[in-house]
Amino acid sequence: MSTPIIIDTDPGIDDAAAISIALNHPDLDLKMITTVNGNVNIHKTTSNALQLKAFFNSDVPVHQGAATPLINQPVDAEHVHGETGMAGYEFPEANYDLLDSENAVKAMKDTLLNSDEPITLVPIGPLTNIALLLKTYPEVTDHIKEIILMGGSAGRGNVTPAAEFNIYCDPEAADIVFNAHIPITMVGLDVARGASLSYDAINELQSQNKTSNMLYHMFNHYHGDQFGKGIAVYDAYTILYLLHPENFTVEDAAVNIELTGTYTKGETVVDFNSKTTNAKVVLSVDKSKFKTMLFDALSYAK
Ligand code: BDR
Ligand code: CA
Image: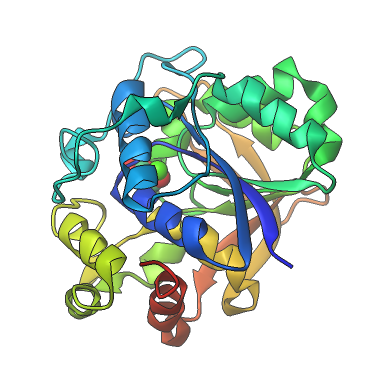
């Protein structure tokens, strides 16, 4: 039985890796891709999602979501992912006939309420759409199995010493999501800090299949965090965790979002000693299994 999921995303090179797996893996049933402002503006993230949909000749609907964070001004990460958001690979121009006209938040609500079974949400960008969904349509709560998100850190941040990019972009949205009383798994910066994708492994991707070759080209233009000798494919860890939770170390914690600190706004304050917890925090992945997991997951793609 495949797991029904919705990916909310701001592609983004590591987003593209997560989407490539999710669109093709037999154990996952990707119901829709929703786009959000983040790494690049909403027009670019939507256009990138449409280019991936076309690359895979996929029927999975793409819906456009929020153009700005709830309160903050947008902050982008073009210096990490390139001006288009998916630098390094020449896709044909996005075909907007492939974009579903319904807004992302409304589309998520309808899909959740009409589903026979609860759906897992996988947000891998700022949490704006998910916060809007939960606040606008609270009736969806019981239809969400869990939220497995990329964001935050139990240690240091990557935009500031305290804050990770997705949470930093829209801390108020993150605060809403972490307080929604829905099972949440936070796949933060910690995982990649212990297991980055080595440059040798990236070179191997070149010849695995067309998808891996596409990612190889983008990974060579990805200026994300580099821990040791390799790159951090953050968003892909959410999908790998979903497929193989047994290979990850996870701890329950109380996670609160810093909303006001002059130097710490957007920090995920992770308390492993709290008696009340609201999230599972993924801390590491079995290093010996990481590369094989990623290559296996991508082997289902063309
Ligand atoms: C997160 O920020 C983005 O740049 C990546 O796509 C990932 O979702 C990592 O901090
Ligand atoms: Ca992302």
